[in-house]
Image (tube, rainbow, N blue to C red; front, side, top):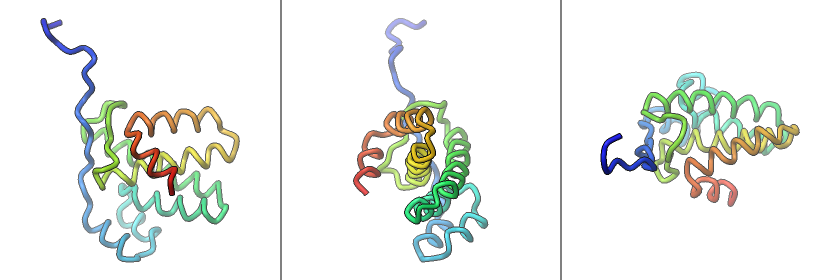
Length: 139
């Protein structure tokens, strides 16, 4: 241990790289299923599919879509240096897809009685960025 080393220091914030083609297609009104098929690592497409499914009461579909976006998002976060903890800021637009997946997955888990998973995901979201949790709960 070096003298003066901050043992409580948090890792730097993780900021995912943007995918402008996928974002343009998704925000331009393309079918999110087509965007997800063309860009399977783009969590925002999976989040959109999950949000639509949960809004329509298709909880199992929402769970599956959100779970896919969650795993693809964790892969992207790790490739960007995330070690399983630390800030994933909501204000960085490319991070929002995976954070939205965390939230929908938590809600779908809660609806099917997976309370431990719900608690774990809400904690992960809060640890990533409390602003994200507040913004998503306000929707």
